[in-house]
Image (tube, rainbow, N blue to C red; front, side, top):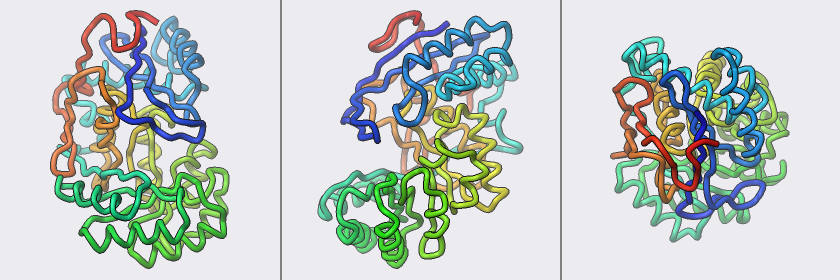
Length: 338
């Protein structure tokens, strides 16, 4: 069964292709397993292409054929692979994290708070709120201002709190700007700078390493994981964009093997995919702070959140499968059957 949904965001989400004010997608259900496909422009296939691929997968005779049907549609493949993993874990009466892990998964995962572009005063106030809420790490959006202004914002947060600080430029800088920014941000003690250059510039990112650790995110939509690992100190893994929790876990293990730190995050997904990403992060030994505190970006959701954030950590559901129960019938803004 395929069911569509549309969820309004609490505030518009800025992307490379414009602002997004809601998240639209599909639930895919088969053999007792449930998966979510929530495409995002610039990261995955279009909503229409996702729907077509899911339709082909629904008509497939078995799970391998269903996965093959959406090989070129990462969000659709995410839904199908997750439904298969969920069905298998439920049959085995184990959590998705248990099914994914080689040993015992974590029962909670540290998460970072995210602070958007703002003045120094607003940035510090938001960071202080995050610290008061128990977060140990904050990611600051940078790149919309002059480099010197962003360095001032980061320095102010470092002075006002004990938070570990990450800076995410979303590919906004030229090589010259990135060189200056990474040198300065390294000196004020950021944990890493995420995607300082456009996604295609792997060589430029490799050259920036040394003055500061470099994390790559958008580049994973342009290059194979193995290529990205040669130019990064950390990789930001979005299961929806990579084509599934299974592929994101493979990427996390490859990163660890290469001495690169994996960071699991979402594309502001709904409860099913977001919770699956929590299980994935829990299956990665000694994972650091991940970008999983994203439920707050949605005004409404598909179900009650089984993985709430408290004191800077997200709890991992321990019931069978991913643990998200979505009511049968119509969904917010969608139809019963797509």
